[in-house]
Amino acid sequence: MDPGSAGTLVNPKLGLYCPAKPDTPELAAQDAPVLLPVGSTEQHGPHPPTGVDDFPSAEACRRSARIMVVQGRPVAVAPSLWCGLADHHVEFGGTFTLTLATYHALLRDVCRAILMAGFSKMK
Image (tube, rainbow, N blue to C red; front, side, top):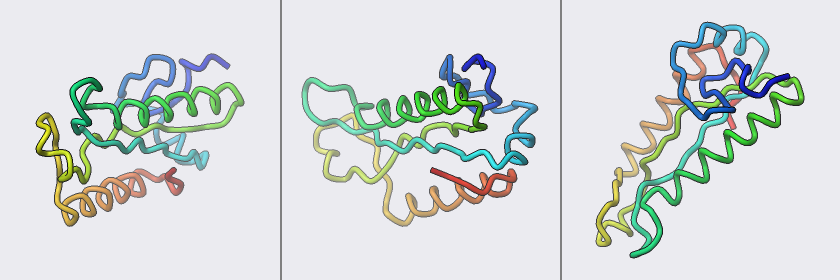
């Protein structure tokens, strides 16, 4: 099976978010897990990019999806949640942070939206 032909919210071959995939209900009906990349946009110092937490999380989900697709297993990859709790990095600049209440609400609502789309497994 071609990894790029997977019915996913993110094309695991190209890493592109495809929000209007017509086969999303079919994936949900197949009990496909939804991989949810979670990272933070924060400055760690003068050399690494601010996406040093988000980039690997999203890439790990894309690579995992590719493996699952090759194995013939259904999978969906949600868009990355790139903002988190990063108060401790604000002084370095280039950092986005949320309050705990906002981050909790964001995660709850994203997971609820995934459940409302018919999926039952999130990883």
